[in-house]
Image (cartoon, rainbow, N blue to C red; front, side, top):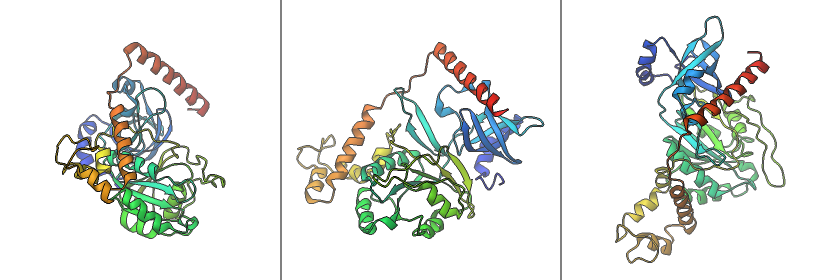
Length: 358
């Protein structure tokens, strides 16, 4: 792969100019191997990239570290297939979630993506509310969002389900696919798998993300596994995020399945995912309408005549309440805590390097 194959363009060249003047070279993160170790692709091929001590001092929050899809500035080590990562270029888009745990920490799933495929299986693991939740995060990412209803071969009324989902996500393309029968794959490839475009597949475990990617690329490089028959839940066969080049020239990011999606920073994402409700609310008689019992409320009128589905309104209210409850700034650790944190990270990194023979 060349840098152009990976999406390198004139805009990136311009953004990279100061780093080029400092003697650094561009690379794209294609896989996150372990904390602070990445497979990065340079103009001369793939090397092992590492975030050194200087990087830690400049970047104190997890979102400032590289993610799969990022463009980075690196310094190659003489005589080695390794490089030190110095800077992360500004991201065009990013799909994020709130990391598990009590701290308010942003975890970036994929960066610089053009299209996010929100994959849901048409089996017993099907969950419309989960689709809407993923859509909010996708809208916040800045990338184009596409809903994929996979496993149509096990669903007798797939078109009816697609119509129902379309009412819950108006304006968002909804595709029916089957990795097993290849239904719908030709349309996906023709419309979105374009050279230099980066696509990310997001969804729960067992929905068939890796199988879809294998079918699109006609390659079995992504590991897959059968789902449990009793509840259609699958194992996390994808254990790390990885960017691969498809025969069409498009770049695909496969991601581990998510048991849950804790929303992060979705101030705009909720309103974009429910733009029809936002437009309705703008036509209410009162600008501060609470949509409960006010006269001239366009939302209540739409709920009454059925033009706004009650389920969609309930989901909007729930996600909006969640957004408001989590709308607090990220607090950085005090300097003493940061020193302890990075001491632990460095110890883990050194142990991993020793075990890997690096």
